[in-house]
Amino acid sequence: MKIAVVGLGIIGGSYCKAIKKYTDHYVIGINRSPLPLEKALKCGAIDKIGSADDLSDIDIVILGVYPGAAVDFIRKNGDKIKKGAIVTDTSGIKTEICDDLTALSKEFGFTFVGVHPMAGKEKNGFDVSDGDLYKNASCIIVPCGADDESVKKVADFNLSIGFGGIKITTPEEHDRMIAFTSQLPHVLACAYVLSPNCMNHKGFSAGSYRDVSRVANINAELWSELFMENKAPLLKELETLIKNIRDIEDAISKDDKEKLMSLLQKGHEIKEALGE
Amino acid sequence: MKIAVVGLGIIGGSYCKAIKKYTDHYVIGINRSPLPLEKALKCGAIDKIGSADDLSDIDIVILGVYPGAAVDFIRKNGDKIKKGAIVTDTSGIKTEICDDLTALSKEFGFTFVGVHPMAGKEKNGFDVSDGDLYKNASCIIVPCGADDESVKKVADFNLSIGFGGIKITTPEEHDRMIAFTSQLPHVLACAYVLSPNCMNHKGFSAGSYRDVSRVANINAELWSELFMENKAPLLKELETLIKNIRDIEDAISKDDKEKLMSLLQKGHEIKEALGE
Image (cartoon, each protein chain N blue to C red):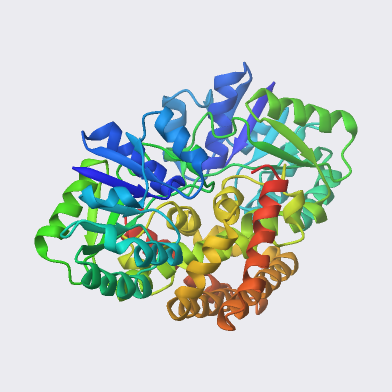
């Protein structure tokens, strides 16, 4: 196949590298600024530096840019995409972008299949991209009305570049679950490091600090966009979390050891039940 | 030296294994139940299964039991400890236990030096103890009025079994910092996994979920004791955290992207400044 990757940050760059590492597909890279493209060409992560004009020849277009930019790119260049080609995104939210891209797919005659690769790092950019970023990770596919054959093609393609499993879901379930599994930990990490004690943690800290604070080194622009486009599910998770923290706080405050132990024990039991 | 380790859970057991792995000291193990002692003797983590009656011959006594149990053990057996011996604890809180053990050290004629090894796992018990648990970890020492020579002896001993550095502090600073670096992440992890979405996370999750939820597999009894004995500093950290979460929540709720970005950017800058 001929594949175009639009946006060569960590996500798009890792797609390029994984495709070249694990398959024989031909890859063109499209990016606003030239530097990542030159690096990608030099290290063999792409076969060619491309532009929107190359899309007439491409079987799968992978959008590795921010959600808003992904929609803008297709709105502007959708007419250049080959009829019947598949377009997938890599966005961390789905309800809004899936509506927009499904509408555009009908207008321009391609098939849109939503994809969210469940992998990342606390750094961004092509320099930290990695051909094994997706190794054993979960690939969430949001069909959004795409035909079964196209969904299977996207699933097989993602498995072929290293993903460990496919999870097929709706935009609504995706956004509700991601609010919990990904967005909430990012809010928490930022809120956590804002404590006045954070700058003095060295010597007093170990794995607990490291793990909860890891993703605080956040891309503020990207995550602001993701949080705001997933407002309702995220606010719901935040309310649940604050209530659960308040329950523990209340038990400590009232010296209610029995209540405190039962709340902590629930946490223990959930992790045990999950086998983690 | 002759060293006694009291309590062969993950912390005490790891002390035994590290001492035998990295030094030539003689180690006796003291534990309520016989099974961990038998395992420790069999795998060479201790030289002898001991009892309180052996303490008359011991140079360093390491208390690897819960804070309350550590004080009880010394109250009951302090008269058997050799005059001039050093007693260290391994407790995760210091203000209360240091007062108690310093008072007992004067009564019985030993020297107490508070120690908090900054290492652990999300599992407990001798079976998960590890001779390299302390490798490169920070060893917090709380002198509590002990003479410099004893403090140096405790520091040198801990460095000799693998610790990467020593942090000397007061009980109050220790408890304030630990409320942030260790207790808060444990509260958070438990509060987090209590979300109704947690049991369905598989396929939707990656590193963010894994890291923030890791320590939810908590020892409810131990941590209830630690939280309640560090009530004031922990409640203060919880208030700070909830305020910081509320600020982010408020910006999302009001679609205030500028405010949201500036809060997330602060998190980013703190981690950058720390070089993490």
